[in-house]
Length: 637
Image 1: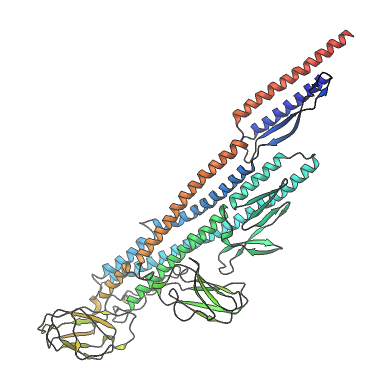
Image 2 (image 1 turned 90 degrees about the horizontal axis):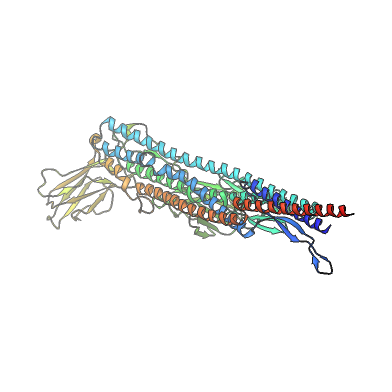
């Protein structure tokens, strides 16, 4: 009977081995499946007086080949890759939009300035003026289109954040439910571990790590899962939800909230690392918003520069030029949680000093602070509201009274491109001419020459701008002086002014230069341009705005700012592509290491199948031998 019992245990062990191996083979391609093996031990022996005789074997359990370190490493690598890849896929859209040299904003901007330059060769022609107006309208349309595309990307990010949060909540609920199912199964099955449920839970954790970076803390056979700076989303069988909420300072932007006691509390974006959710948030804050602001800065800069030069010129009707373009203005938004009545208004006082950053104004009950968000620089901190003096080209005014902890979001350039438009509809309003003309009569005896003159910025309000002025020389050619007569304003004196060849002579809002060697009695005149239809001097200055360094404190031109935007987005895209590929390699290595321990190797399982088959046959032979022995024994009776 002892031999029969031994054979029976061997047969049972071989049968369980065959079943386990077969299950491994069946699930070789099942995501999240961990290879299983039987844990077999020797049964206790029986003392026969001549020594202990073995009592066979026992299968204690069927365990899965799980390594927590390798699983954690794989999940972390997966979170990192998912974040980078999501960020890369998003920024590629901006890169494709800006990098095309044949379509989009760059050629349209070039087309506008080219049309102005072409029109200067025949400023009185209606066709060339119409080309300028049409290209201006195309430029406005392109600015608005580019801004709309970026806004659509922002809406897409909001939608994806909402979808990702829903997925996170689903996985969190699933993990908590599996925790409870595992606990119940162990209690009702004499402590045996339900491997299939464990596999499902680990797969759910893996899926969750693709959405957001997680920390898993085992507690017995239960998983507690944490995100961010330690917020629990799973504790035993309890699940805690995330939600989406509108940004309190920008309602068009979706933020992440953690539900605690039924109340959602906004989580800081920088606390949510890893996973596609982090990639979306990083794309929005590090790429999308800066791109929108940079595009707006260009639009505001271009409109401001062209308008200023237009106002220094004269249109086809002989009138002072008017603004050609409009542009969006700064927005100042109160936090929806503010308790005070304060409202802040922001205006641009110096376009050249504008940055592409947003700003935060805070009030702590005693002091106001102004923070530039792009580099987190504290620009102002005082009990007095930011003074009238401009900060980064901006001026702020406040109405009402703030309460302690109130804060405000300032977006100086975000709407610049969306608000870019053409302010004129008549080609005659294009100020191609200068409002003044200069002349050196042929009767002059010296070699003095007078420049065409320019009107000084800002646009003069002095009605004397076009009043006739005469400059008369009254001294020797190299060390003489001159007198200025006519209706004039400006720096005195007007009599016996020392002559400096090529030096600026400024009166009435204009500046001219006289070169050469005028002699006593030579005169030069400055007067109104009464025949400006064929004049293109101001048009040439408008065409030259493209390369004038009028942005970033006179370090960048409008065209340079666009090139810088394209370069920045291109570099970010290239860096994300490289880091994403590196993260993918790391994920592959982590997955291979995990699979080397936990994955199903069909060759190995085929070998195990043969081994257990032979063991089963051998155990059957033992049972057959016992049967023969019994038959022989009975035949002797």
